[in-house]
Image (cartoon, rainbow, N blue to C red; front, side, top):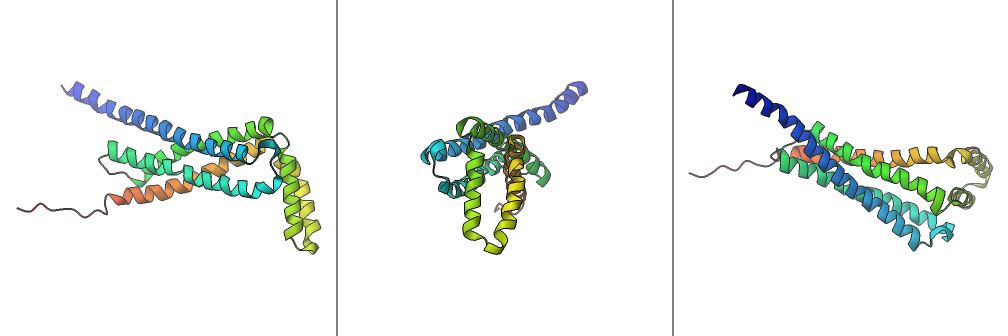
Length: 203
């Protein structure tokens, strides 16, 4: 009897790990699909590879907003794991672990999307984006500082056009934003249950 109880006890962590893995994959893929869908939609709506470089500013805003919005699946994923598997209670550390794992999916997806984008969808993007930044700098910078800043940008041009470097930057951009959302979600969800007032039954 004790052996059966012991065996059942040992299976519980494995079962919880499997549940966490399935939830992480599901909500991670939801977030990744949303992020890539918005990226593709904005690309084609703007005119594809022939889009006016002046639209890049709007594209950047849409890009960052889509990253933030896609992170709603982090909050929902943590909450679902807490409510369905932990009786509505979760520690900050456990919540942060779930959130951090979910974020891996959109971060990896966005990094790979960047590779496809600059290699196949718009191979001239790096050059066009650089020229856009130079023109923007020329319009906004103080004339006395323009040459110095432009020289700095020119020196960094090759590095920023490097696809592996871009891929790492894209991954870290999404992951850092996602990690911040995971921290905030973990704070809210680890406290929300304990903050509820206990209801006493009347006799």
